[in-house]
Image 1 (spheres, one colour):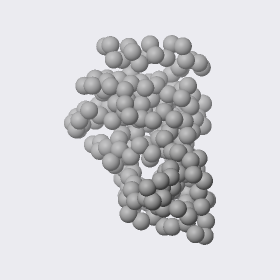
Image 2: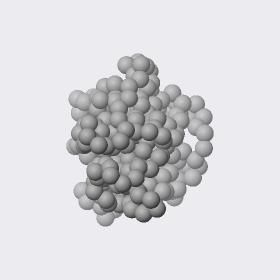
Image 3: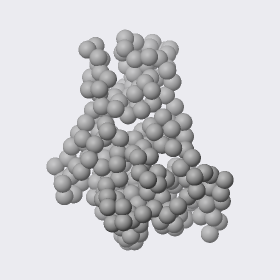
Image 4: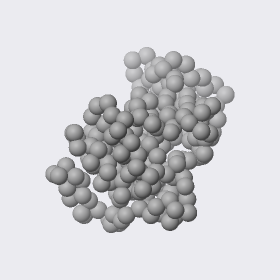
Length: 247
């Protein structure tokens, strides 16, 4: 299948070499770590290996923030499937190692086959399907994830997802009256799902902050910083943040 072959051909020159990921049972760990700012919003403090997680609205910042913890694992490999607009500079800012990131920009109708192949070789896959996902296909891929221990982060809805996250409100900082550069975004991230996640959790985060990273508002907020207001509103001058571009 050409689209799958091209994924692996593009990694021939990459170092260190791609290796199969150890199963959760073999590694003795049931959770894939996440960056510290996200631990409080996740019911278990990490991403359950072998499961699918839905990111409502496909928010790219939240998707990358959730994926960034993979760098703390022994393998550290991740993949992005069906995300041609994914900003690699932004991915690096959130903490992903681009040397250990496989990218299949446009798998088309073969995205499920690509996910099945990659699940045995990487620890985390970011995915945007090319359309609605039938429940029977989601169930087949769920079995693949359970066997491999891979985490699937889906930009959008996913049948049977045990955990769903989304950005409920957000505010950009940095722009003045027709001038300036975006320097950061404050958001409220919410998580809900089944089991321990059924009650839901929420946290206020910089996604990203002025340095392109994710952190809690409490870590960086100053006395004069505005609260989060409407979604994707833009704050004017006087935010107290250094003016720098965010990719």
